[in-house]
Image (cartoon, rainbow over all chains, first blue to last red; front, side):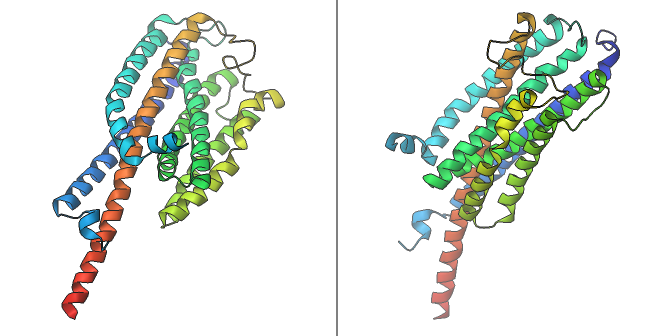
Length: 57
Length: 252
């Protein structure tokens, strides 16, 4: 593999690795954040907290 | 405009994005798999740059997406300032980290491409510097948002900064035409059509489409998270007010 990529294989692989790490990190952060927010909302709703129930109007 | 506002309703967005997200993710995965197969097993090496041309297939889409997400943020900024639409603010907030990541990928892959081809990781030429400015603008937008506690004030401040930063977009695009740069001129999105061979153009187009759908899927997911966060914040405030009232009644 490294031979087929020629003398600059390290640069090519480093570029792909950097992109993969950044995109995986981004996707993981977004998905974990969304899960945390969903859990927080579910916990509030489970306690009966709601706009109509909680407001004075 | 009424129908656009109706479509941009957060509840409707949550429903539509919930339906679209699996399809977007699946299509992105399929296109990226096909594109990367073509890049690694079909597309030829460049007659001058050899196999380092493989870096182009992530560098160029990352650059396009960094510019596209900033342009999208600028449109959302107009939505925030002119129509004060909450979904525009959500879209703008969710887009900033994604655009920043693609700008960073563009800068890093460009450096890894530049070293073997130019003999250096970095030069302060107009294209590279304006791209670095775009990355710093993204960081500035994220930092400004976090520095202001009140969401609507933060949204307006970020919208103004985003619109001011817009001046950098045409500078990035035309820097290679306006100034003498080490970076090559445009070879795909140019008047007169692409100058690269179809055997390299198609893998580039397919990977670019795959990265675009992936970025849109991430944007939808980040917008969903932000909408839920704002709902949680509102409910928490209502709950705190209710508990305050109860404790006041108990004290009387």
